[in-house]
Image (cartoon, rainbow, N blue to C red):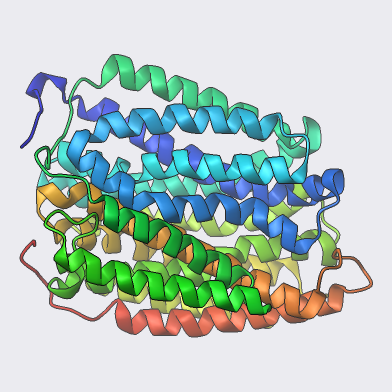
Length: 463
């Protein structure tokens, strides 16, 4: 059932609000990466603890995206998007007023819950509001907004961190969230409820959330026996979840979307692989540029801006192209180009020039931009309207889980070679060696992604 008044659909406002949300959320994450050395200095955090400032946000997103995607389909996508902005604003204020590393990590986890409410609905709202022939264009614009946010983050994050302190990042984001809340309440009157009469799958949700949490935590601690145990528990839990969903009349995640819809399944796998192979690049290079090359946060930001800037520029035209030609060719080509950029980064040394890193990031950004919008278009176009919320949540889950997996790989490698020590001139060679291993693993993942992104038929009947 669709509850929607035609005069309540202001497409321009909807596009502006979703793009603004998609701009500032990733800006926050990337800007925090730039600020990590300053945060570490204030709270005396080691490399592993620093990674949890990022990973706590991603962990919460990965856990809550799927349940909130289903809830949005049942009670209203705009409603969940609005509540998500409110929750996110409160959590962001808590981050700004944190007085310890642990408090900041917990506040970032709460931010992740609010982010899950927003990211599980933004793409579904856009797809619901715009006609099919404009789908690739608006997806491309929203994806570009994400990358513009990533582009602005190194410069804005570096500038604010150096001039006003790292807490100013959270003050800015809280203010933007407040503006978005007002815009949603005043300007967006439409609502989209496609699964109003369905019941919520509490059993599946209660299995999924702890299983995903255990898996992600286990990945981040694989060097310990406890971490391995959590990873195994998480995998077993997800298997139980899949079996339970097949028996549920109203599953929180319809497994038919994966087992009977090849486009949906392989495109989500490709999204996971792509984010797993690229997200932690900025985290690793931010530390490398500041600790090995002794650049300031602002200077490091000017180098790191290359990748998201190319992503944004390419995503705009790749989204439009995916409305006209087979998006699978675009996605697989983008993944292949990303491989070249990652191979270059696998050869960094302490004296590697900044120009070399900029070229590698430019190649990686071009490939990612060519991949992302067409791949998202394939996912959203392969399902019926009543699954838009869960499809949006699923692709966001693949993104968050991929990001988390990427950070887990980076954290694991740093832990193996650097240990619990703070990164310094004394162990910088060990850190660089760990970085090379990270980029080699990412390269292998991306090669696998080239094949997964090309699997499937050119078209598929929505399930």
